[in-house]
Image 1 (cartoon, rainbow, N blue to C red):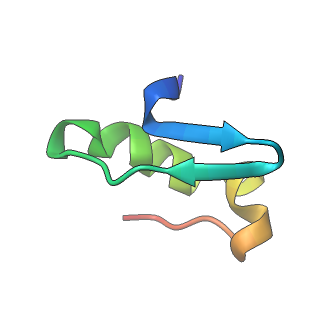
Image 2: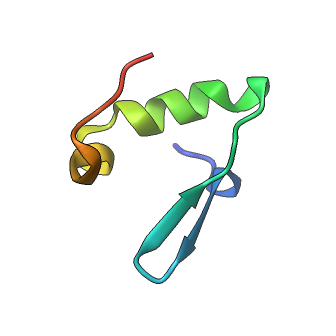
Length: 46
């Protein structure tokens, strides 16, 4: 599950805050998800 405090949704826009080192695992799951990242060219694996 993705932590809701890592982003802010305003209308149809989603803003992702700069992660701390402790939050990188959650961010990597978000960026690796094809459905989440389809509008920006696909998933990013890091």
